[in-house]
Structure formats: structure tokens, C-alpha cells
Length: 226
Image (cartoon, rainbow, N blue to C red; front, side):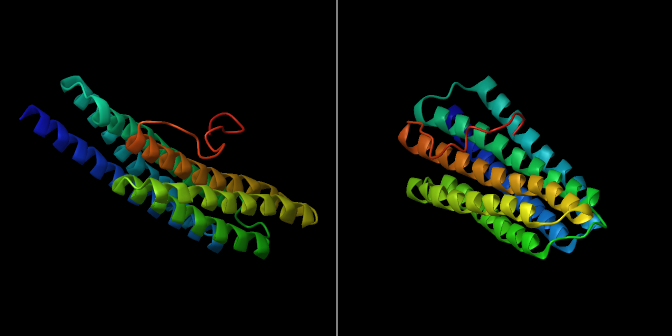
């Protein structure tokens, strides 16, 4: 009975992870909408909504702590607990990046925008959303082959990030340049969301095979705090 209860707890943790990913996708979609509309009020919704993501994150953290306090998982069960622990953190970080995007929308309200950069962010955002879905779905299905698709998707979003940098240098000066420079942070946030999706894919491979390997260099952030 104790082991049955343990596996029930594991299932609840996975269900919580799925629910958290839904919250993150909602936050990302709203942040992108606020960006494309240049809507500070919508951006404010993203910032307030982050409390729900944080609550989901904390609930899973506490669930893992309580589970480990009562049971000593072994082999595959232990890998699942560790994978959920890592994935929970990656999803929470994604939520933080959505908040950063929203704050930049509010910060740059009223500045002239560049239509081409906005289109680039829409493209990046769609790719980031797709990557989150692939990452979470492949984890739920224990589908390593699908998780590996994240590598190619990540290359596309990285290319979009590089194009955004190039676009900044094509913008003249003054307020337009000020807006564009701030938008480089938006581009970086979207790229990092993709990186965290790749990290979830790596956890899927670890869970299934028992071996950890990096799909890309996404797990090596280029600056602290990411």
C-alpha cells in the first residue's frame, strides 16, 4: 500500500507539472500579445499572473519534499523525482522571463517601435511556445525522439535572436534606437525560454535512459542569473 501511495504522489506531481506548464504558456502568450500591441495594461496582467506560476512551483517543491520525507525512491522512481524537480525549476524560470518581457513593455511605452522587430518577436514567440509544448508533451509521453526535436527548434530560435541583434544596428538613433536596445533583452528572454525547453528535453532523455547528456550548450547560460 505504501508503494501504491508513493506512485499516486508521483502522478500528482506530474499532473502539477503539466498544470504549471499551462500557466507558463498562458503567461508567454499574454506577454507576446502585450508586446505586439504595445499594451502596458496587458503587460501588467502578466506581472500579476506570475504569482500563480510561483504558487504552482512552490506546491510541486513542497510535494517533492514531503514525498522524500516519507519514502526513499530507487532506480526509475528516483530519476522521475529528480526530473520533476529540474523541470519545475525550468518552468518557473520561463515564467520569470515572461515577467521581464512584460516589464520592458511597460518601460518602453510611448516609444516609437520598429515593425520588423515586432514581427521577429512574433516569430520567436511562436517558436518558443511550440518548444514548451514539445518539451512538456515529450516528458509526459517519455518520448526521447520527440524531445530531440527541440535541438532543431532551438537552432531556429537562436537564429531569430541573432537577426534581432542585426536589426538593432539598422535602426538610426534617438528614441527608436532606445526602444530597439531594450528589445534586445526581449529577444534574449525568448531565446532563454527555448533553452529551458531544451533542458526539459534533456531530463526526458535522462528519465528514459538513465544517462544525462546535453543536447546543446543551452544549459550553459552566458551570464549569471539565467
